[in-house]
Amino acid sequence: MERKIYNDLLNWKASTDRKPLILQGARQVGKTYIVNIFGEREYANVVYCNFEKDGNLKEFFNNLEPIMIIKKLANYKRKEIMPQNTLIIFDEIQACPEALTSLKYFCEEANNFHIIAMGSLLGVSVHRQKFSFPVGKVEFLNMYPMDFEEFLMANNEDFLIEQIKNCYNQNTALENGFHERALEYYKNYLFVGGMPDVVGEFLKHKNYEIIKIKQQNILDAYFDDMGKYNKESEIPKTRLVYKNVSTQLAKQNKKFKYSALKSGGRASEFANAIEWLSLAGIAGQLFRVEQIKVPLNAYKSIDDFKFYMNDVGLCCASQDILIDDILFDNAEITDFKGGLTENYVNNQLICNNFNAYYWTSNNQAEIDFIVRIGKDIIPIEVKSSDNIRSRSLGEYAKKFKPVYVIRISSKNFGFENGIKSVPLYATFCIS
Image 1: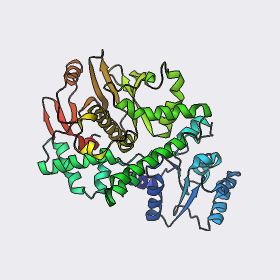
Image 2: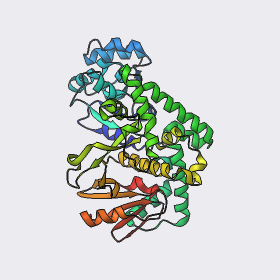
Image 3: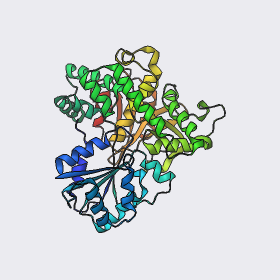
Image 4: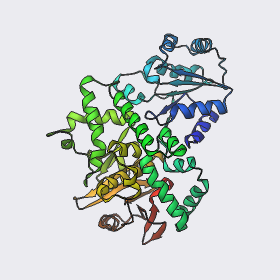
């Protein structure tokens, strides 16, 4: 399966001021796969080092001189390591802090060697274990589960993608046959999600029971990870918060409530757990913005946020949702589907590098997402179906007079009365 991040890797390789690259992302999003494929295609050979699986590697970093490290790795792996022509991969680098520190010296003294480092819990490790981080000596890329465009790519729907993008740019309706096909893919994506291993099962067999098993395996791996690089007293809190993320999305008011975790629950008690989940990349906060002014980040309320999972498929699995609940619009999960749809849009915006927020007005109106597109602050309202009636969007437009607003729903493309209508499947076009 092709991933859009591949082009970013090509740009990194071709850069004249290239530094060692750190590829960040949660476990199971496909980091190891895409980097190894990149190495096989674009380099003469690959030297792969996994610090969790091979404890012997750590000894080679007692001396941080790059040339000595290269000599030891080449001999140990029985492979020639050539400047410019060998890709060196440091996987699960958080298991060897010295290897992370060595990236500084590779940048300063041996930058002709191409190195990509990865670590599923690297963000947690750096913040919690006081690692010596090579600030300014590395580049970063973030990798996420497959977005909906990549899901369509995996299903060989390049023509459909092209038509969706054209209709988005021109604000013209997509032919009904393609519109219905895209909505069908979208519903499947809500259940399957974007974890490559799960998407692979969908492509091969469309066996939804096996899909649920694979998703549960990923959730179990996440719970196991919560015991790593974490204080023992924080482990049960972290697991409790993660279990509660999808549960709170099923509520009408989706603002995250500590009191829903336990009676009398407070922010101070669960702050470390929320930070751990965010740093691990398996959940993320969407903060409320108090004023519609640039820069939006300066006006966010750190006390008010929604919490979303990194993958909608895992969100469904955590609540034991069935594929028929999604495909046939089970009315009993209406509230959860609203939260799931918001989770989906949030993930697509993150993949497109947006820093999004949400907005409320005296508990009378709420806009699901506030983003900056170019120089304009644009509100985005999300509907999980074709019911597009909304008082909140009208109140926001009257108060702030945006150049236009975006409404995401199952309706087709269009532009009328300052409202840009975007079908749910086309959220990836917002950039």
